Amino acid sequence: MAAAAVVLAAGCSPGGDSGDPVTAAGENGVGAQPTPTPSPTPTVSASASPAPPLKDGTAVLVRCADMEDPYATVEIRNPNAREALLEVKTHFVDAYGSPLLDTSNQVDVPAKDKVTYRVPAKFQYTDRIAHCEVEPVVRAVR
Image 1 (cartoon, rainbow, N blue to C red):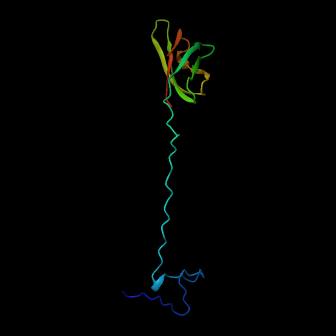
Image 2 (image 1 turned 90 degrees about the vertical axis):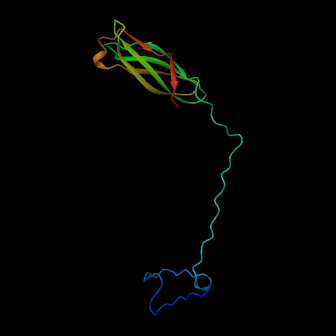
């Protein structure tokens, strides 16, 4: 095996004229290779268990929308031990029982708590809303 030699001409410096320090070559003029550092192995705690799936919550209509206040008021309850995003569905119906507007809103509810949420009705329907319906089960989204 032939040894490599590094020759510097007078007035030249390795790395250019920047005056940067020169890193010494390894044995026999061959560049030294860095030794790889092993990455730490992640540890898994035996006590860490996945969170139980979220249960669906409940919703109750408190007040329907009308011309004076175009919002239905709904009380949403979260039975879970952690905060949940719950999907509440509200239906606005005319005097003949025909649907005017169906809405679906996602609401954050704190753990083991309830939230009062105002569901907006579109302006063009407020004069025809006879009653509101809220689906009693609100689906847990996350």
